[in-house]
Image 1 (cartoon, one colour):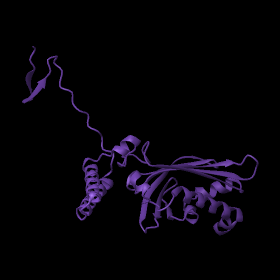
Image 2 (cartoon, rainbow, N blue to C red; image 1 turned 60 degrees about the horizontal axis):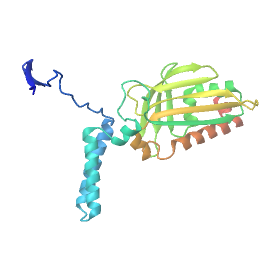
Image 3 (cartoon, one colour; image 1 turned 180 degrees about the horizontal axis):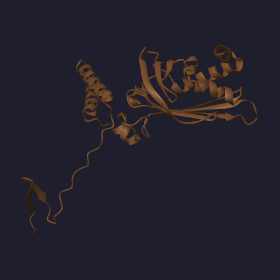
Image 4 (tube, rainbow, N blue to C red; image 1 turned 30 degrees about the vertical axis):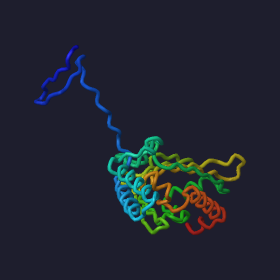
Length: 252
């Protein structure tokens, strides 16, 4: 029988198989939990374990087991559920939202006003604070970059910088957040003529990665309610106020 042998390379012994190949190494799974979510899992796990100790029943054992699983999740930085869904809450090094991460929303509304008017109102980004209830203000930094301040129902203030990355006057505006954003986001708004000449179709697409990743979105940590419903209500408010002439008069 052919024996395996050890060779010395750089002062370290390495085992070789009889065929001369190096032993196969296990591939390490990449982390798919961001720092904030890892710390939250560890703290939450410790809380469940402490709660389990106070109960002398099967429910206490179950709480302890869940707590241990959460701590392991935080320490390793890996979540089996996220892996199966193909998502991650690790902050990207590039702007916007990484592929297959976060929440995707789409809403549209028909506004009985000329496309030029609707586009011009939206293009002046500070106007959005007048129609979207969670936007506290939008400050223009230059022609393409802006600073956004959003306040959640829980009183938390979130801020980030965004940049318009694609634009076709009267037709489309696309943007993405810049690195370091409190909420990584990207999206577009399109202005299409209504086929029967009844105004403008405003079509909004939004993709964002909420604080705490998918877990944060599931527990409503960003808005406290349905973000999709909020966008729908904001667009309905835009329709009502533009069609009534209220926004045009106040802007003038």
